Image 1 (cartoon, rainbow, N blue to C red):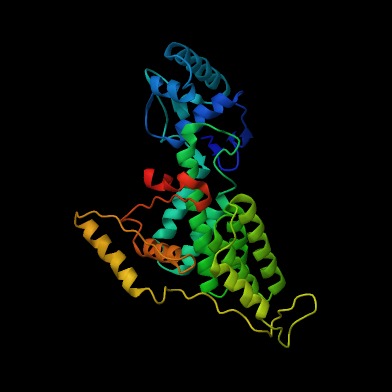
Image 2 (tube, rainbow, N blue to C red):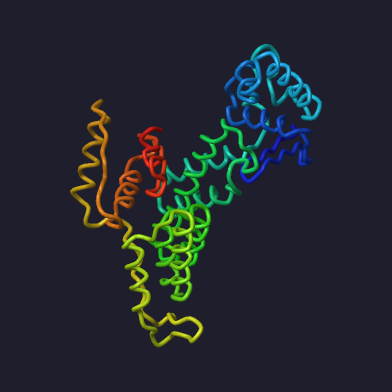
Length: 341
């Protein structure tokens, strides 16, 4: 049977039996996208009409929906095999032969979470990183897309961070560097990503590039947030400046193969045993029905984010879901947005 292949990451593309399909309008793409993201879950026509035309009265929104669904019927090959359009409910058929990049990304991340070894985990996360060609429909500004777009962005950032960490632990520094560079491009306001990239350049004998990463970090933070990097980032920069070339150094790159290197980050968190024990104790209490809230606080650069990430990684994926939001001091009152959400 002919297969439908749909790409939503990085932009909309739909193919049937290897042939590109043009649905004719952005609204038709939006409806197909929504049904794919909610695949297997019937949506009422009333709800779909409201989502697509929230500022239009109900009668006009329903009329618009009928028109666009008629357009989809005419442009989507074998439409009845892939979509259930009869009655007051509309859905994408799960039994249809289709491939969806979002589904493949989620499956790869899930397999990585259950992987029996660091090598298998890295292999599955590499698949996820390859599938993620860009944000979910970056050209679309639909409000209903934002939660899913944010979820996928966060999952991709965690995958890249974990890939860089795994390869660094395995001493495959070029691979770790490649994923760290991609993570900085994906989230240039995550300062820890810049520090990791600086350290990995140093581990690869590229001090000049490590210093360049610091200057780029300073520029981004001053331009976007109006602040300077933290003390931890400045300390790493000063450590790089104080490093001296060794016997294998070249004029073009002051740090060569035979020079002083930074030690790779430890695979486990060191020096935070009491704090980690407190977090795990709170989690065990939560599993027993005593839910609570834990606040991790302290000066900038002392490892709060690392502690939280290590705790999250220590919890099996099948036991808990993680929701992540971010704010910055320069945002003023919006700094409370994560608590509100």
